[in-house]
Length: 363
Ligand SMILES: Cc1ncc(COP(=O)(O)O)c(C=O)c1O
Image 1 (cartoon, rainbow, N blue to C red):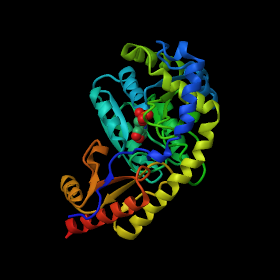
Image 2: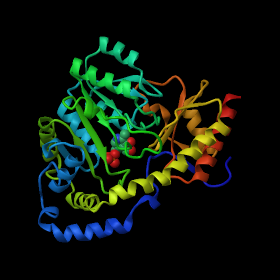
Image 3: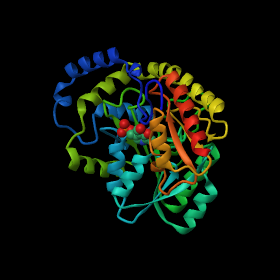
Image 4: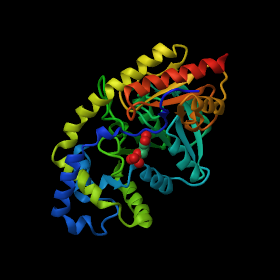
């Protein structure tokens, strides 16, 4: 049994001290007074125009290439409705974001996992799969992937862009963590490499607040128009007041100033996670993320995932079922450590508990 408080390695949420409460409150008051006729009314399904314009400009696109919704996961749902038919094939990294698998399957797509390596998806396996299947899209999280922390390298990005053009599938590039880079240089986006074949999703959840539910997609205007129709038929208009707050927050330059603060808040937590793993679990395998929210850990040996969850819970460590991140059952037990939302001492205690449970199960 554990002593001390339960540690949770479950959800990728920001810590409360990451929220810029005063700035958000000020922006809310200012924008609601300035633009009530638009923000408190039904509006366009593609989102608040000034924020669409701000996002378009920041990314070197036209405003018709942008749709904003109530979080980026909602847009993934719209994309699935607009692009997928039952039995379509969707390629994903294995592991990948568990909720994305759920959304594709709900649309009755066949989800095929391609093994992920340190520097992105295994291209030999990807090309082998392309000889057997004709995917409608490849869902990829190239920067500080959820759940592994891996970043796709430049060579692989180029090849994926080429393959998408050659084979005519969509690259759904999901980049909610991209700006949370703690070390090294930015890689170019897939969107910059193959603008006609990429739909890039991103979000203010991890940069400002998940509660404001503001995410967006950048892509070819004709696809954005189709998504806007699905959005309109779903909710008429997304939640506009929070989009107004995000706009005002960005316009005042707060986002730009908040990024270094977030990087300074999260970098030591990543370092503590990697140090704890090296100290407590040297026999495990993990990737060395350069940013983001997660370190994914493979535990060698034949551990039942349910047994691991149960024993960890008894030891005061709550885990997410690692199998959920894979379309097919993985060869080794997988544990995702979302290090941003917890304290360094919780990270250290959690990894120590994981190591103890692992050793007991291996005995
Ligand atoms: C890869 C990825 N995509 C999308 C989302 C959903 O983000 P949002 O809050 O914008 O819906 C998450 C949230 O954790 C995520 O990790």
